[in-house]
Length: 200
Image 1 (cartoon, rainbow, N blue to C red):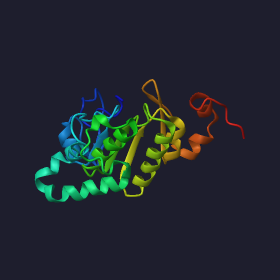
Image 2: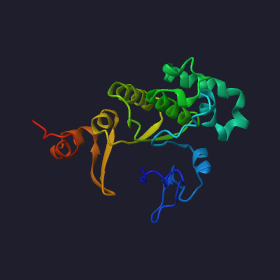
Image 3: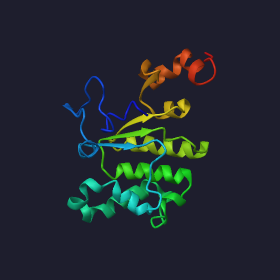
């Protein structure tokens, strides 16, 4: 989604600045942004389909490969603990995995950079409801580890169950903002995004 692309350096914003940890990262290259602690799990996952699950995970830590190579296997094991469905699939090609497993792998690859800020762009796209529920549950657990998560998601019901703070965007502008309880209580949100008016 274009709203988060400038943050990770995919293009330079036309106006304004992007401030992260008190410093401007406006116009920085993507690899510089990753080194500063920001990771993006892109829409449609963008995995290297012909590479193995393990190789995809290792690529998430490419920027620290030389310095931290001995410890990367431990990092992989931590990711497999978060996503146990990937255990035993390390040698499988990423492209052979189901959509749900691919999304887990994409998130795992993002976590391999050890980000302070993890951004996810439409992680529920094309996934079955049960898989979406599982992934959202994992995001709730990840929040408890201290990782800040920015979730860009059109599946409003799922997003509201995960989010602490919410901003609703329409046509490039923010139309509503608040904590999740305030947004859930807003009848206009229910009418526009949940498909029904809220009944008190």
